[in-house]
Amino acid sequence: MILRSLLVSSLASVLAGTSILLAGAQAPAQVPTGDEATQMGRASADDAVASVLAISIDGLNPDALRRLGRDGTPHLHALLDAGASTLNARTERELSITLPNHTGMVTGRRIESSTGGHGVTWNDDRRRPATVQAAAGRPVESVWTAIHGAGGSTALFASKTKFSLWNRSWPASIDLTRIQLDNPLLVRAVRRDLRDKVRAFRFVHLSLPDSAGHDHGFMSRPYLRAVVQVDSLVGVLVAAVRSDPQLAGSTAIILTSDHGGRGATHSDPTRLDNYRIPFVVSGPGVTPGTDLYELNPDYRDPGARRTGYELRRQPIRNGVLANLALDLLDLDAVPGSEHNAGQDIDLQLSDPE
Image (tube, rainbow, N blue to C red; front, side, top):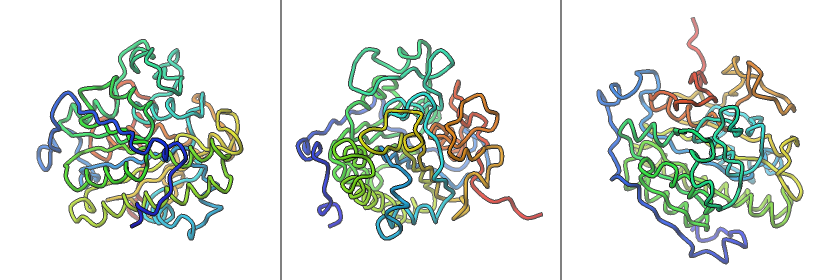
């Protein structure tokens, strides 16, 4: 009933039937468990996590959660309560737009190729450069290649066609790619996949707030209604995990965004409303209701500052997602990555001595 009652953006309404389904070059692998999991990665306190569900809400300004409160966004607030989080995380410094920031999430790299970044600076469906590797001018690995190399199955669910770049870049490592512009239909596909498939990693991209922001203005009433709608969709996904006894005890959820926004656009990377984003982690071994900066003194809450990469104590960036997911799965960091390359983000309070 929730899915049927949700409204979608005007673009999604026009293209509600648009869906692209791509299978990877190899059949999905089963996720190793027990001794096999220990052999393929590190043994740690995170051994209970066998699967990671990463959710990116496109264009989610943390001020929307404050404005709407618990009544307006009960599912997102419940996720904050259940996990370790901050509403003052950062995008990549160079750009506050969708495809560059999402590519940072899955590679653990900054954007600028001349300083080791992934090189994806565009934000459309162009086919040249054809791959992330071509944009960077060098081989670029990702969370997809790391998990596939360890024998795990992966899936990408996206609501913008530009994400086909990832399937071209790592075709053998993403076992399922589904691109569906209608967010409720996309979430329905994710829910089925959670029920029917064993996977180590799923990445879900939801576009409703961004679409409403571009059509009506970020933080406008239509934008806030879109955040309420996407909150319900997140609730569907969280319920699908927590209602399944096997998933509930072995699945971590990471939720973040590619950028914020206020007014007509989010493209100016020097504006606080554009580069400030949420970051939330919930699941086995995560101390509920904790602040990521308080748990991680090696990372610094940047206040209102934009911050550069040269600082020793970095803010929590959306680009830490790849190596955090791998750490939860007891796998090594993405080769050549920068964000959280030491996999040193703590998600639980230290035991009292």
